[in-house]
Image (cartoon, rainbow, N blue to C red; front, top):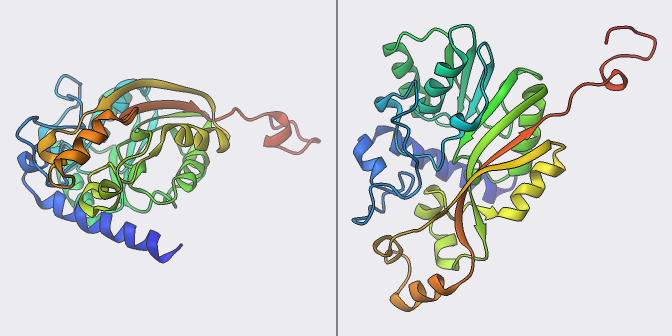
Length: 284
């Protein structure tokens, strides 16, 4: 890992440790908890979870950019893994879908988030939801563990996204699938936004081009790739003014493309006789 990648990881760890300790209202009034609060909107990125079964207000830090669990096709008894699980919101929604016979595992990079999520699970008396601290570029789970993987506005914060998709494929069972919400770009953002650490930790400057993002999924060997939802993210002028002057804001608005939230579904291939056992065996 390069020193720049390590620096970015440490930045994210520090920032999201702070977010875990902030009041929920502060996080929800910001750009993914980044702190550049806007008077124009309650939250720029996230969708409304409150109508979903399993929603828990203590676990909702307002850090998402979609509703991946709503699209994840979770069945009763599934094992679901949430990458970048934060305070546990998506895990608890997933539990409502998989039920008491299933299992939900949250993975988060930040110790403070793991502590918060475990406390929330304990308050809810959930015995089939667990949280593990780990790097999603090297997920602390065995091969073929998950029926479903979800993630909400997290991969954009990771330097090596290709490694994450490879890890997702490794931990998914054959014919397992993922549903991931993330931030992508169409066209180029101004350099000032890319270079500002607050905006990086706030979900925008770590994003890559939509075409490149989808190509990574294809290159990892996933099948049946579908965009389940897409919406443009409009950053209000009072946030942009922290980073750009009036002329730069006007120029940005004239550019084609912009910042988008997408929710993507893809499936791991099934095992075949040729790759699951020796030719002389009848194990398949």
